[in-house]
Amino acid sequence: MARKPNYAFERKAKAKAKAEKREAKRLAKLAAKAEKQPEEPLPEPGDDAGPADSAADDGARPLAD
Image (cartoon, rainbow, N blue to C red):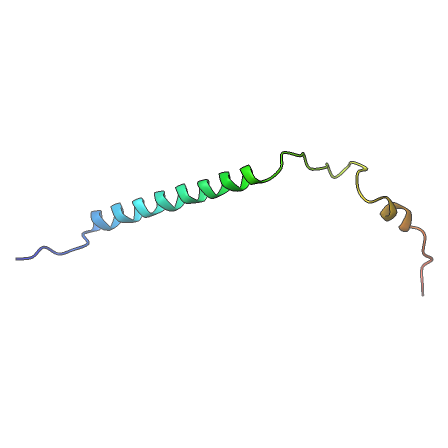
């Protein structure tokens, strides 16, 4: 008599292996992406390193009714 395939423990083991493989692939992808990006720090939101004309343009226009 042939055994019944996909017992619960076999399904769980297969699902666990698939999840581990997926997680390893995700981490490898993140590592490759981090390696590819330059190491320059991003400007902080409070820094004045943004475009100079944006601050001058805030009050330059009169309000239209």
